[in-house]
Length: 139
Image 1 (cartoon, rainbow, N blue to C red):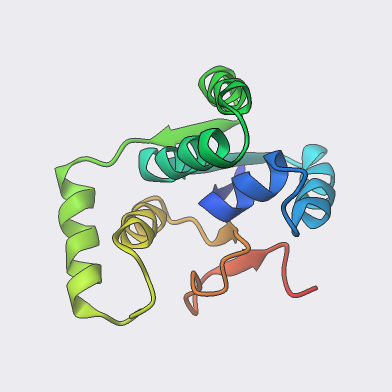
Image 2: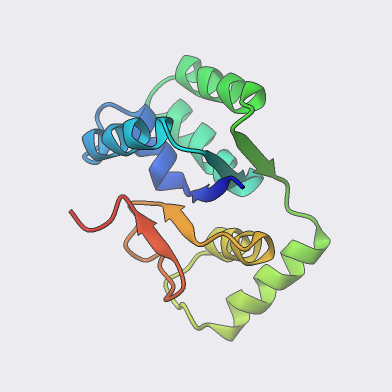
């Protein structure tokens, strides 16, 4: 059975933006995971943020390259939020157990719960929950 790891926006941006302060840690994590039986999960909400940031703060070319990689990867499941996930995210959002979370964070968390994922690649200190293992971990 494959190990599923959710990749949050900051994880993607750290990996594909050499100017990101977490770029080295992201590259090292990806190298460590390459030889393992791992599949990655992300959402359309995450990719919206990634593509926009890469285009605005980097280049359209980089955003296009990442998009092509995402579309052609057999190791990534791109989860498109539907009405069930959206409604669950709204419930998480209004329950306000994580007051620093954006609605996108709530969508991602709803997908993580739905799929039973327990590990998340993120450098966002606000995106944490007790049942999630944050990768690459405290450095």
